[in-house]
Image (cartoon, rainbow, N blue to C red; front, side, top):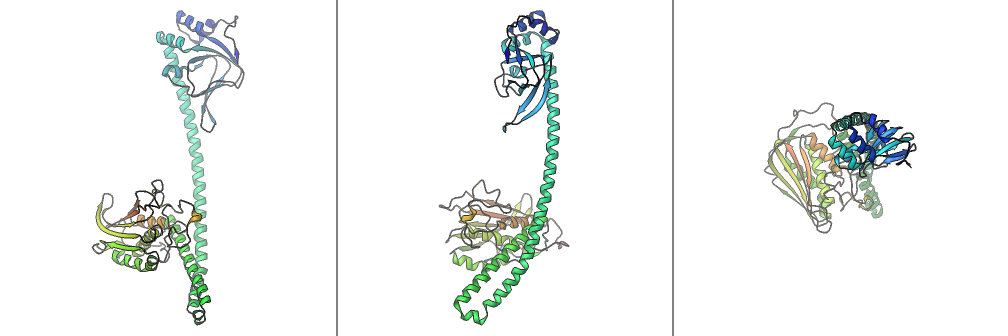
Length: 440
């Protein structure tokens, strides 16, 4: 930049007069006395967004670009200005910082006028105030136009990205479903053969061989449950859950779940208490799906409750503001709890927190591993019934074990006709593994 503040052959008042047409001579004198001539090369920055605005600029020759700065150091073009136009007035009028970065687009000469002289003349000259107001309005209009164009472009990019993600998600879901289904078939055969070997007389009489076959049976059963959960999740995602409603007895459901998990509860020295279930009326719902949903919730509670803890199942009739008369089932544990930042995410598929590599491998072991589908499947089943599911916890603490509480509400009046949905695909067999979705 060249400082030409005292260039003798430049009559600043003559320069200002056509630019500020209508401005009284006295005010022109004030502006001319305060003005400093500045010469800039192309690409020079005149002022920077965010800095204090204490000067007002009038363009004598050349052009400048107004730019918006972003946190990632990128810039967006707002508009340009040429001879006779001015900038910097907004920061002075509003007493704030610069709202844009100004850079020369070509070699330019500018008049720079200090804040005090500008405000003195502005206060006594309605013509200048109107001129500035008109230019500010035009500048805002240009900025709005640029913002609308940028927003349209961004929306189009987001729309295309969303379509691509949807296609990829469908492809992924199809692949997972087909793969899980194809793998489930040979695993089921392997499980059957292993069970046959398990009871063969030669295996029964050989202790070492019997232990090996027991391990094969246990592993194949676990693989079978994992594939079932993957298939269930793909049907939840595709909206393919078929509800076959019939009168559901909640005491019967939880008695069956207790029987299935009895060995795991005994091994972990966990107690499972049931309260208020016998007083519940029959509910029009799909017994197979609800069995699966609550099995996932209870298995999840087992995984995240230390040995010797307690799991309490509570049933009650409530009137939900959204669902009306409903059955409420609460699964409460004395486990490690859920942190506030995770409680809104635990029902998302594949969601796990903590170091997954540190999780134990047992299906009902403390902090056991798994694909993280149990709570997502449970939510899908409850939502398909027109119900609600959520979790509550004071927080996460492995030392004090504040516990958590999962609440499910199923409406007594189904939102859809109680007939089976034609063409819907049922979930996999009820014998599934509720993968521990609760955060660590």
